[in-house]
Length: 415
Ligand SMILES: Cc1cc2nc3c(=O)[nH]c(=O)nc-3n(C[C@H](O)[C@H](O)[C@H](O)COP(=O)(O)O)c2cc1C
Image (tube, rainbow, N blue to C red; front, side, top):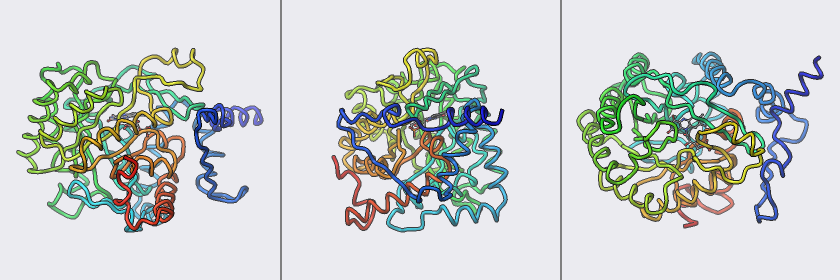
């Protein structure tokens, strides 16, 4: 019995051999092997990969997500435990500290939107070493999202497909929760342990031509608590949302959101998160409109509706159906989009790079292609909580290898 259970655990959670995992030497891909600890020694990474991930991956992804959130809130909820964890994970080296959007970011690796939809685990997540936490996507009205199941693992590809559909309690509930715990920005000392981004989306039941009012409602409730706000028009899981990326729709939307932000919190940083599925002309237009309408940054990119060559059998991928693909297979495309955006922006505002990051080399790749900071989601699911520390330490090592003094000197070097 025990043997069978263990067998299932390992089959479910182990990362498959390199070829199955998508490594194709014939495509000229470089293989990066990172070993942090001698074989046989116990490290948080090896414990997660060997024991915890196999156990977690026997269960439905969304169930695991809720348990992980509950576990983090419980385990890292108590101040002293959180402080201890933070001491181990914190990125203390000033070479990786970033000044952007009017904030000080203690590191380059943040948590991408979608993990903490309602902002219930900001400090526990910050204590894992994230330099910032982006909560949401939050919508004007609370909504339950798409029917279950809506999140799927493609472990041969170290990827996820999701069609969550912005399940969240709504902007007023999030505001009430934040108000209980924190002061608004600049009004008092009770602030999250790291800069807080709040990612805003459109309520599904609200018509596209009324989207602006829905975003405004979220801005009015939440802007006082956010170090930066994000307009998300790039999720593939709300019907019609991505049509708001067209120039004709984006301009009035961003203009209206900008005005709403300035009415509540003048000058507060507003960012636009874009999809990797835009064509070149669409990317250029979105960047131009964002800059003209007063955005102070871009996030590249959200998940993709494309299905690039995957190691997962095609009938399984087809069986999963619609949704946004994230993780390793997204990395190349999201970096391409990032590079195009960076060339167009030409240093005028910072960019956050996100998509498929699993190693310090991937962090470096995003930074060299124009990102000032990065975010992870899927890499956190596959790599476990210690990945943040590993990424920061590895990036610092790369900085030294390139004989640079500060991470800002690496931004855009490969463009
Ligand atoms: C389960 C899941 C839910 C997500 N939800 C959101 C969301 O609500 N809003 C958003 O802007 N991005 C969302 N994302 C996209 C991520 O923020 C990120 O842009 C994308 O997954 C690429 O990064 P990754 O490859 O590191 O996962 C979600 C991703 C996943 C996997």
